[in-house]
Image (cartoon, rainbow, N blue to C red; front, side, top):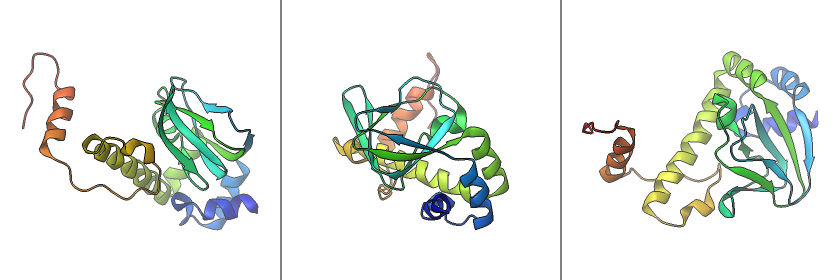
Length: 175
């Protein structure tokens, strides 16, 4: 019952019927992590996402802190969606309780309930907008979390930089 109440309080699961959340809760693995313990290592292949029930974690690349997440936040959703190497490490800042949701269960849930896919897309969109805003305002990366407000529309310079990176060597970018 506690897992269902926790899931219902997280935006990506808020609109899921309770009977579905009961099934989901039965498939979650609860993990207790001590402060200082690494949960996810950059470069490892991920097939699970994590829901922070209580506690706080630091998202980092080596010694560089990229952000902090706390109660009711999620992380690991990128690797869960595409099973590619993780882009950052995650370490508990304080004693933390997590729910781990594996890829197969997440895919099944998204297939049956578009609200979950929509919720994950919203989390990812907020994080991408924060990163884009960080390109314009140095230092903003230290404040990334899933509650960050969307950034203002971006400049053409940023789009040009993205197009340059996507263009194959020797090819002109298209505008």
